[in-house]
Amino acid sequence: NWVRGGFWGVGQGAPPGGGGGGYGPPETSQRCDCGGGIGGSLATAATGQQMQGLPTHPAADALRSATEPRLRRSTMPVPTIRGLLFDKDGTLFDFQATWRGVADTVIDTLGRDEPERDRMAAAVGFDRAGGTFAPGSLIVAGATSDIARRWTGIRTDLDAAEIEAFAARAALEVVNEPGTLAPASVDLSALLVRLKSRGLALGVATHDGEQEARAHLAAVGTLELFDFIAGYNSGHGLKPSPGMLTAFAAATGLAPETVAVIGDSVHDLEMVRQGGGALAIGVLTGPAGREDLSPAADHILPSIDALEALLDRLEGTDRNKSTDP
Image (cartoon, rainbow, N blue to C red; front, side, top):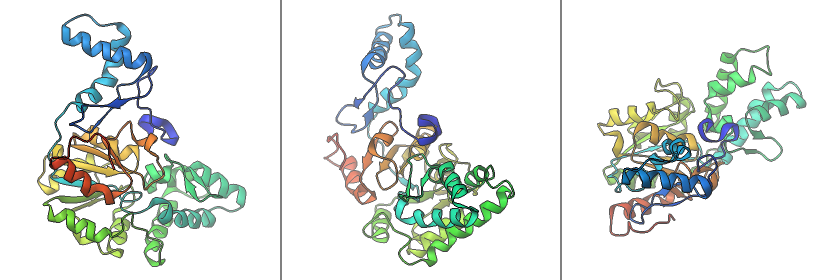
């Protein structure tokens, strides 16, 4: 999220000076953010002149590095998918429903008065009054350790380790609150079983702690369906760095280019680019909207319940459609 949109994670799909975007050839069903206006024109001119062996305009040269990866990706054949790597919160679980109460509890407990609680909430992109998270909220995009470090600037009497430990305990307590864990699927377990029956390896890459992630998945009866689970403290780095993707590929014996990543935020999807993954599939069950995700996404789905239809379309005769469900 820091890469494309700063603190609030608002996606910037076109290069500087450009605007808008389009879709690649219909058979790819993949977005090509080539840009509109002067930026898009220069980018198009740059690639066209290159192909003809002609000198390029200096401004187009400056834009080429930003546009060529998307141009190349839009014309690639549909990849073969062997593994699915899911974000957890906002993807497997509805983010707002699951984490609103946790955020309230932690802030109410750690904040010593209302002004301090408001400052803590604002520092991590949480609206206490509305109970909502900004698309690039640190609670969405960061790890528990990042949140703890941010709050030490407000609770200067506490160190980051103390705050991190308290937040981790609050996250674990979610499993004891009936109805708090809200899967983002009508029947998450059944969906995952069907995906496994396709021969797909399944993994989770989350900025929650690994212990907390395992507890949440166990609470909804899906832990044993995953071949790989990584949290911020599992030793593979943080998204959008590619460590979780490459670790999943290594653990399951897959090539990274056969792995699709499904997530609700830009940092999930950017991991695909950095790790050489197959597809970046955005879902709208987190705080980010379509406009936030589209610069980084090959496909955007309303939820993971639409994933099977997308896989069917990519694998079968219906792959010529250029719009997602």
